[in-house]
Image (cartoon, rainbow, N blue to C red):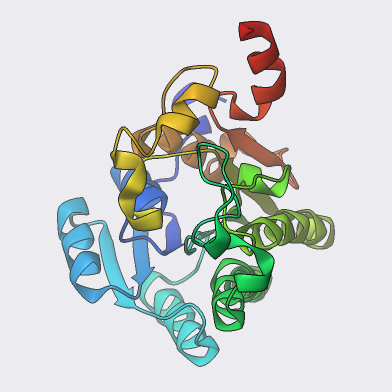
Length: 275
């Protein structure tokens, strides 16, 4: 297959949840740039309108709360009606979990400790970062199975699925671990229908999550120190991976956890080498 055909997504019907900002916007941008028909879901109506306008004619948007299952069902049905099918779904919507029990400098943070963790906050993070991903993937599978021509489901997990870190809010860790396990579970179930299910597992990227704090050099110092590349990524750097997983180039890839973290998970060995 020629290289151009390997990465051809032209005409594909694509949904991106949480697509008005950050990584979701990057997914939507690359899909639309390569000729796919993209519907962006987001709760922030103003930013959604701006994102869709910036992307151009291959994108449109729906204001949707990913935790509202009736609204999500209607939104998926609207995409299927407008595009005639659903080929690729990025289950991306997520929120920051707030501070962990350690500061980036390694001191204890009372606000992030388990006995101070607000129950409603826990429930919100799990609802958005895990339960909504489950329901998004459920709807994607329902439509793709009915179409009978396969499809791609791509979830945004995190390197937090693989290790524990005290500076990250506690609810975030099990939520992302759950997403990664869900991806593997559904890859086993849906492979017979040629529906490929994979996860993108980013390290630190400069996005609006956590209030956009990684745009501040002082706030991102811990992450740049831990990265083998000595920097935090921009959202453009996730676009090739998103395109790969959505395109014929990844036709034999399912159940995979695609880490994109600048080597941050190598931190223990890297720090030992530096000292």
